[in-house]
Amino acid sequence: MNKTPNPPELVILKALWLKGSLPVRALHEICAANLNWSFSSTRKTVERMVDKGFVETCITKEKSPVIIRARISKTTMLAHIARTFFNQVLEVEGAVPISAFTNSTLLSDDELDELEGLLGSK
Image (cartoon, rainbow, N blue to C red; front, top):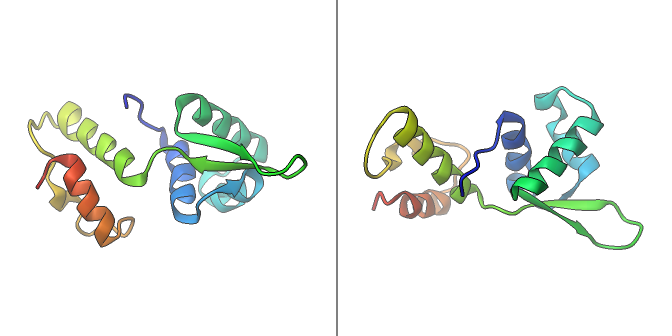
């Protein structure tokens, strides 16, 4: 992966990782407080996220709302963001220290173990 989500895209991804697949309207309602923008802005951002490969759309029935789901796992995205930050910003070579994530409320113990493997920290 060579793309990093911008802050609003991360808000949307975090909602999808937490709640699973959602209709765009429900996704907007969950994210509205953090994004402070209109439904059409959420819809447009989701369209761009589809183009970037971060999310995908699913239509369950002909007249039901379009469902959005994350195409990339939380741990894969976090590993990418961490590697980018540690390597390009801090100029740290080698494995990203998993200790940077140990107090995260975003990760379960299993996800932390998975992230450790993705980061080459084991």
